[in-house]
Amino acid sequence: MKTKDIVYIALFAALTAVLGLFPPITLPITGVPVTAQSLGPMLAGAILGARRGGLSIVLFLVLVALGLPLLSGGRGGFGVMVGVTGGFIFGWAISAFVIGLLIEKFWNRLNVVNAAVSIAFGGIVVLYAIGNAWVAVAADISYWQATVGAAPFLIGDAIKVAIATAACLAVRRSYPLISKSA
Amino acid sequence: MIRFENVSVQFDARRALEDIDLTLSQKRIGIIGANGSGKSTFVRLLNGLQTATSGRVLIDDLDPVKDGRKVRRHVGFVFQNPDNQIVYPVVEEDLAFGLKALKLPKDEINRRIDEILARYDLSDFKTHPSHLLSGGQKQLLAISGVLVMEPRYIVLDEPTTLLDLRNRNRVEHAIADLDQTVITVSHDLDLIAGYDRVLVFENGRIVIDDIPANAISKYREMMA
Amino acid sequence: MIAGLYRDGNSVLHRAQAGAKILAMVALGTGVFLIPDWPVVSLVLVSVIVLYRISGFGWATMTAQIKPMFWLLAIFFAVQLWLNDWQAGLLVITRIAAIVMFASLVTLTTKTSDMLASLERAMRPLKPLGVNPEKVSLAISMVLRFIPVIATVASEIRDAQRARGLDRSILAMIVPLIIRTLKMADDVADAIEARSFD
Image (cartoon, helix red, strand yellow):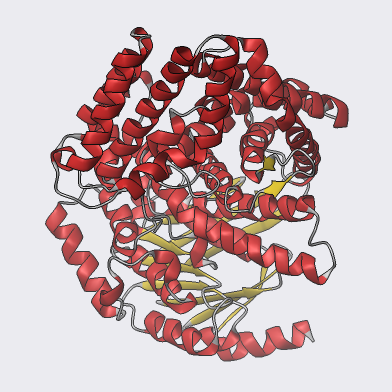
C-alpha cells in the first residue's frame, strides 16, 4: 500500500469523526434524530473505493475502540460498540466496502442512478441487514420486528444517500481517485 | 553539488519543464516565476517527488529516482503549508517521525529533538498538540522536522506565503542561520534578495539566471 | 489532542492488562448469551455494578453509561412483556446492561495509550498477512492530526458559504471540504515521502 493510500484512509476516518461533531437534526413528527456521521462510510466507499474506503472505517472504529469519543454525541469506547446499535456501527465498515465495490464496478459509466443505487444498497440494505440482525439477537425479537423498529430511520438515510450520491459525482469530476488504482 | 542534465518533464498534454541543463553549487539559490511556470516541478525533481521524462538529475552524484532513500535523507523539503507537513498530533512525536525512519537510537532522537526545540524557542511546546501552535510556530516546527534529519540541502517551497510579517521575519532569520545549502521557491522577492543566485522560470524554461539584484529587476520588468 | 474516555484511578481494574480486560469482556459477552437465565444474568449485572464501586466510580458515572439507551431498553422490556413474559423482558435488559456496562468499564479504566500498545502487540502475529504495525500506527496518528485540521477547514467553508447564503446546504459544505482535504492529503503524502518514509 502506498503512502498516499494510507493518508487517504486516515483522511476519511478523520472526516467521519468530524461529521460526528455536527449537531443531529431531529426529524419532524417522528422525533428520530439524524446524524451526519453515517455519511462518513458512504463517502469513504463511494470516493475511495472498496479497499481503502472499508479500511478507513475500520481505522475509525479502531480509534473508537481505543477509547476516543469520536462517535456523534461524544460517545466512544467499547460500551457503545457492544450496545444495542453496535451492529450499525460495525456494519459501517462492511457498508463502506460494499459501496466501494459497486462504485468501482460502475466507475466508467457512473451516473446519478447507478451511484444512488450503489450507495443505497451498501448504506441501507447491507447496513440494516447487519444492524437489524444485531438488534434482533440483543433484544430477543424476530428479524422482521427489528426491521419494523428501524423503519423510521430510513427517512434520514434516504437523505444521506442523496447527499452522498451528489458528493460522490461532484468529487469524481474534479478529483477521481478510483480509476487511478482500481 | 546539484546537476540537471537536459531534464524535461512532460505532463499529459503539457510540457512542465523544457530541457533544463545546469549546475547549482551556490549556498543560497532563489527560484521565482509565475504560477505554473515550472518552478515547483523543478524543485520536486530534487528529491524524487517528481520523475524526469527525459534527462537526469544528480545530487552529489546520486540519482533521486534510483537512490530515493539516500537522496531524501540529504535533501530536506519544507512545503508552503505547514499543516500539510506536520503528520503527528504532538510536537515531539512529529519531530521523532523522520528520525525513527532513520532507525536512530532513542538517546540520539531525544538529543536532536531537544536541541532543535531550544534553537527555535519551542521547548515549552514539546508535548503540546501541534495544531494549537501559531502559524509561524507551525512553520518553524515543519522546518525543525526537516533539520533534525541533518540534511545537506534544504528546499523551501514558498515558506512564507501563509505567514504574517512578524512570522515571515522569524522564518527568514531561521533560513539565514542555516549552514546547509538552501534552495527557496518564493513569490516573496525580499526573501531571496540576499541570496547568491536567482533563477527565473517561465513556461518551463529558465529565462533568467543571475545574481538577485539583476534577476529581480529583470523579473519585475517581465511581469509589468 | 483529543482526550480519551479514560478516568484516572488506581484500582485492580486500572492496573490490569488491557488485553486481559478485553478478553474478559468477550468472555462476559459470550457467557450471558450462553446462559439465557435471568437470575444468573442479573447476578452478573450486580457483579459489574460492584466492579464499578471497586474501581472507584460513583452512581453518576455508572448511570451515564447506560442512560443513552434507557428508552430503548424500556421498549425492549415492553415488547418482551407483550410477546412473552416479564422474565424474558428482564433477561433481555439485564443482559444488554451487563455487557454494555462492563465494556464501558474497560474503556473507563484503560488509557488510550495502553489500549494502543496492546493493539500493536496483537497486530504482530498478523505481519505475515501483510499488516504493517508501523503503518497502522502512522495512520492512527494521522487521524488524530487531521481531525482538528478538517474541523478548521469545515468552519472556514461554512463561513464562506454563509457569506453566499448557502449555509443551509450540507452539500455546499461537504464537496469543497472533501476536495480541499484531498488536496491536503496529497501534500501530506508528499511530505511523508520527503521525510524518507517508505
